[in-house]
Image (tube, rainbow, N blue to C red):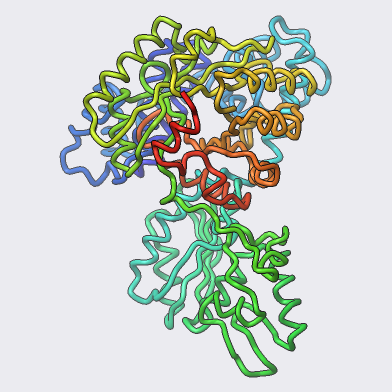
Length: 569
């Protein structure tokens, strides 16, 4: 049993317990354990001493025993019994924005609804709004949430598929017949949602590669098996397609199978203008193959510089290449620190020191601790008194650490009345203030825009976090005028966050490009709630690259001294 399968079971247990109204601490324990397991760089099944599981952060003795039972038998008696309980089928409702565990239980108890189809029908017929605690507004939110889930039903978040596809790529890479290999398709372009994973390899023995591929341990079902292309469905439930081409065609195939379709059409058209035929096998002049071993050869054949995969969407990149004005895109190695992370002072898993050490180990110069303010009660938000104590603790740790700086900060809530959740007197003491909307997402566009702009105008606020509030596949962005938000940031020298949390990626690539056009700095932060979440920075950087962002556009490419000067605190 893989780590992902174990983590998924633990999450499902937490969801069932949540609907049943179990102890919140018990529910949270399962969630923390699943997060720890998903972040491991090795498989639990590979441990010779399974007793080490109980020593992993966030995993207690009771859950450790359940994990060992899963590893030893392939199933968990407690879980199997839990799935037979009355409320177990209702966990599907938790994927719907606007449907919490209490609402899920309510519609079942009062209306007997236990499927998404039944829920949609009831909402369309107006039967939900009559229930105590719901009302017409919640009913409409649920209906929109269902539409959102159905919209993304066939697509999964980038951060879900990417590491799993990368693991499969590493397995295929070990086949002795494989010479070159890469992720292709929308995965290589790092789109925020992915339908399936494409892998491209080169080999002189394609059929042997196909045979080994369909027999990978991750395989649940073989969809198709051919001489040069095969498809499997993994045990994690997504499709992976592998194509194998001759080594001399790998560059041409890499370009062709990376896409996008619109970009490829433009490239082929430019080739045709020069009397060339460009396809997945190479570049041909009449019948003679003149290029195709590398992607650079493809672009060079039509007098273009190399265009990074993230830009290949036919959204101006070809014109920019023709004019030699392609951006020098930001790279992961240029990030100097993370300016939005959480700790166990609120809803994080790790201590301040542990988060700082993890950041330092990544080669960062700094990290900003931004735990929640009191309005986010469910997260254990800090009172002003606790925030003052945290500032003092950060000061103590900074005296202890060498060559690294912990910045004191907060993720302060922007209340629905536009007021911040902390007084200015405490905000003034912080190194960094990140402001965010977490409630009342249904406010009219004009109200929401004014609400955020007022926070931007507060001299103590530095950054606006996850500016549109979206959760990919779960919640649409709230109604807000992003042009006005950006103009206010420009006027007040404030920064917009690109939140790299996998379900957010907010700012989107489109908004990143707009911010760049307006001359507004962004910051790429992970919103990490445990040390392994710092890895998510790569998804933020990928989204920024799709938005044509360069190093000088990003706040946390600054050195510590440059950053402190910018913040002016």
